[in-house]
Length: 235
Ligand SMILES: Nc1ncnc2c1ncn2[C@@H]1O[C@H](COP(=O)(O)OP(=O)(O)O)[C@@H](O)[C@H]1O
Ligand SMILES: [Mg+2]
Image (tube, rainbow, N blue to C red; front, side, top):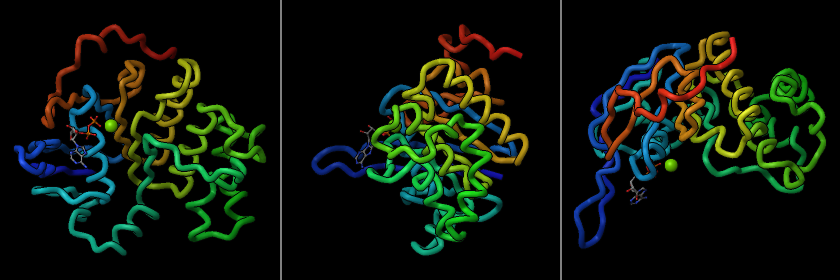
């Protein structure tokens, strides 16, 4: 489903050696598989996700999603790909202030669906994310955790085949993190969504099929020792 082939991103730096943010990553992720990607700050996690989202061109190598090379798409094709096939929960929140949780969540759906139908389609997802009581609250009045869940609802609203999430539990308490991770896990299996989760949260590892570590732009399949202590989810 997702295939990274010797992916490289070097950022040129004037007057210095270029930064080797991603330095030869090869990886295959299956349909419905959920992987957790760990790595210290500056290890290249966000750069990697931006290339998977066709938001950044690699220096070399390629990214295939369902057999298609997304690194060679035109601007127009790339934005269609992001709209229809991809869900991306970014590290920064991009909720519109003054607009309700519900209207923020349906933004992507509204590109292809009428308002009433979009509201109807997203309702079950809002319910599962525990947002039913917040639908009509303006985004700036929501807690950080609620905002994060609105972003997750928006990302999943179009039923993407690939979901990228950059620290999706970064501002959630552990009970809410567990719920969000369990939901991602469930939806990924149910709908065959491939999930690439970037996290610092040891909890994420216990929900993923595979845990990978990025270090200086290179991938390692070993689990960092800190993660071994992560408590498994209740069964
Ligand atoms: N636009 C950019 N220009 C130059 N260097 C960058 C840029 N974006 C990221 N970097 C550098 O690339 C490396 C990886 O960054 P990033 O992908 O943001 O890592 P992470 O998300 O793991 O913290 C860092 O050394 C960072 O400073
Ligand atoms: Mg980052």
